[in-house]
Length: 275
Image 1 (spheres, helix red, strand yellow):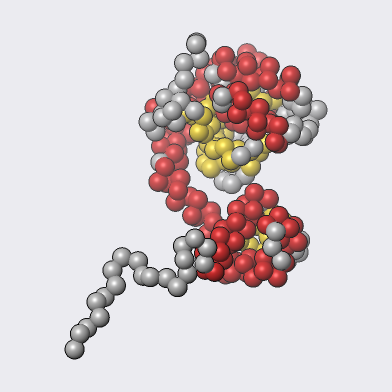
Image 2: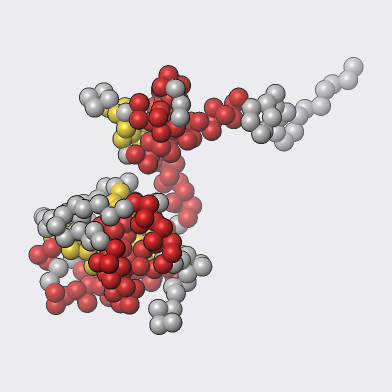
């Protein structure tokens, strides 16, 4: 009697890899999860419309993702949002990349040197996403939980990253996002913003004063990858009253040095700003 050989590698599938029913379901689920992450929080109707799905189909996908902790549902607002498992999955990627592990002691040293909360963020489309923070001991301080997003043009970290991007890439992003106004100090015209980015590029650090939140300021610097392109940013933030004009250069240099250290330790290369 011949015994069938045990299958090795991956099993044969009844569905072709180019578009079987199972893969289509996975594609829809991942697309919907990405849409939830992009929106932050949204109703079933908005998510279904964004993905071009029937509401019943979108609801089945969302409840399955909820079962596994990738999304949550707020019964009060009737909105869906990212769940803890999605955060854990993203954190696993960041651990692999090494940015948070390498950055953590540098954030702490920056906080101790400047006396202000130190932050680490990565770009995501037209926004920056905060991934790590070391808080100052000051009772009045800035706080950005991991996962907090901010538009690039109204963020110290975002402006530091924008300033070091190829100009055409920065313009494309800004045209896509627009320049929404958050306070009377928001740089909401192209001329004002690009003049600010020029100053940031020249000195190596950005300064954001009351542009996102009244009474809060931020100084940021870019972190670069192996190709010399900005891949993340480091910053300090706190009440504007503590960011005195005569201390900005000292604080800016401290942030820029911290960014350069993370760039070096992660194998990145800073561009030559003198050229």
